Length: 327
Picture (cartoon, rainbow, N blue to C red):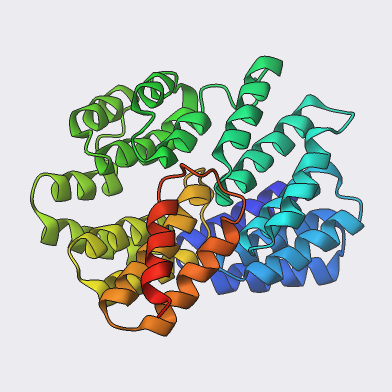
């Protein structure tokens, strides 16, 4: 029954009926207030952008004895709600858990994500390397590492290409479209096409839109991305925001990027795309002359990045922007 209900919540979200999914999940949790029901409620709220509500439901699932899966979900909701220190502490406990290997692997992956949100990519890489050394059957071939490498801004392209070549199976295919989009965004159009062809995702809507953009049809790409955004695609909101910011269509860029920030999607790209979206919003607000709002946005980013690697892509730009906005 929990699996079926989880599927119902997913389907309703995909049909743009997220509020109905939340209502049903809340009713199930009231009728049978156990850990499974609260995990489903947490997921429904995540998909609807209610990050604090999701965190509360996940916390209740843990209290009701949901085990390591509930704890992994709680770590996820804490990160999405911006409570990175708490998320990191919980992920570290999971990664060190005595018990099923899947629990430790899940904890390690959550730890990598929360460290990446905070710009601590060296620490995140060490955890990824440790996971590879200890065995990664749970995630082999899914492309999780390649998706993480996309956050390096092209600096680690050779390794990214090697990792993308390991994609396999249904999980790999699910992630191949997003990876191809990332490669195309980085200017690697032919490599993006090759990956999409190998994995059978040439018709991915997001990839088609980015390829249009990179091949010169910015307006056509924006229209395609807006259509995807209207169907609830958080990834489309992010890519659209990047496109619009690059085109200096700043009001539209801010709207798209803020829509992205308020949505949840289960992707390894969010942990690096979210902080980058804060920088893009701050830069757009500066160009629009809204100094106070731009300062608030970049301050928010620099607070998240207070322990970031000093050579993190975007950090120098964020600090320079903050200096410009100081007076």
